[in-house]
Image (cartoon, rainbow, N blue to C red; front, side, top):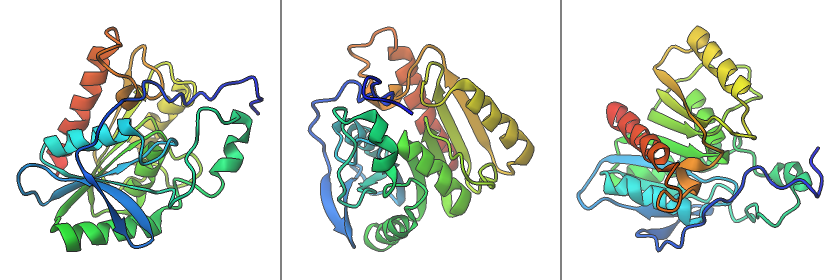
Length: 245
């Protein structure tokens, strides 16, 4: 187990100073950030936060990017008001913090979001994109919700379910080569088992030289060596959604 001297491997990265374009709304017992495209759309993407919470500017930036590409984007507070992880916290306490914030225990909130999108926004096609904690959640939802048309799990794997390779929704998995949270042997095992057991379309892609969080927690303008990979991953994300939505 990690001790006080060991920093959190899930680094917050380049925290963006970003003024989001959408608005916060109340959905049943929790809040959500919603941003809509410039023209009417019946397609929506649920954006699932990382451990730093639904208000992280980087995550809202990704939601706004999806809206700029024609999707209604909604980023719910899946921690339901509980405090997100902080870079100042002791990593040895992470598992204790996680106990009441399991990415595989969000069905109640997901069902409420699906109802909101259908009833309040006229949505007919729904996809999911998640980062880190949200990448695990995205993988989880792809196992349970066949109505989800497409999923993009960005550095996240469900590890504890026996049925974790039996996807119901086409899913793209994006990983970083130098990820201390998800070693490459776990990625290889995921891909091998999906090849054997998965009945829907999937893709597993590893980005060379990158670290955990690179798609949304590295700013391409101040990381020139990483910029092509950041942009390529975001393009892959959009292409996957466009293909199945």
